[in-house]
Length: 188
Image (cartoon, rainbow, N blue to C red; front, side, top):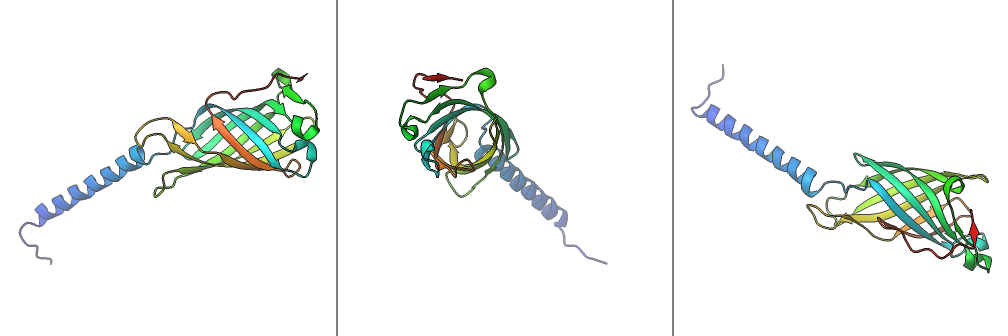
């Protein structure tokens, strides 16, 4: 039989209360201070090709409208190609504004890597595009952070991408606002 000293119950309840308080503090820090940035909604993506094996795609600019939703740390959504400027690589004006049925639709899947000991998190996602010519996959990698620790908009840094179309690589940026576009020389 165990013999307990006086005050065991006081000590037990004090330790239990301390444990509950620590658990509550960890919960508050995880959910309020170190929470995953909310990137749900409509965004615009502009990508510029820097390297490719197909010369007409060099320095090409593509713009997409993204519709994203966040489930935990997983990102899902779709994208529509809305603009193309491949004038530099083609050596002549070649600007297309995609409208309605001519927009190619992409499926997006990704993840946010939470980095607790850093000022930024990492968003990685893939875009699966299927248009009239072929299927393709593009991989995107970007750092992001909240403007303020407790609240504020998400700030995106410049990211990098690589695509299966002509082995393209380059940089991209994401914004809540549309990017500037040149006037269309072709309509699609």
